[in-house]
Image 1 (spheres, rainbow, N blue to C red):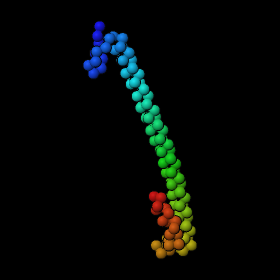
Image 2 (image 1 turned 45 degrees about the vertical axis):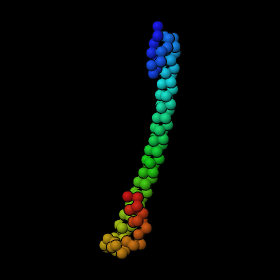
Image 3 (image 1 turned 45 degrees about the horizontal axis):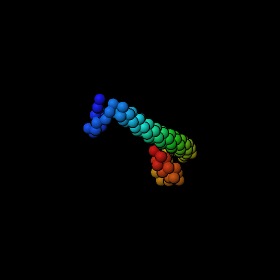
Image 4 (image 1 turned 180 degrees about the vertical axis):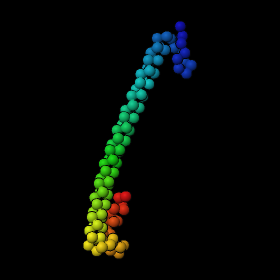
Length: 104
């Protein structure tokens, strides 16, 4: 019995069976390699996400701290002077205002 297995080549039944087995194993190898590649990409993305979440949490904490410092300063200023600080009066805290805006 003759079997056409690959690109029109004619093989005996045992040869075709062996060829089919090799193709199957090659496909498994390619799938395993692809799976490893996907796993590596997923691991890389997860690590990037963890790093970005950490960075965001750090920026959020920094922003909250600056906001509280500015709020306390403005409240203290208003208690002491009887009015909210003007833009000119806020100049002493310019670095904090700029820092707050940069993390927003």
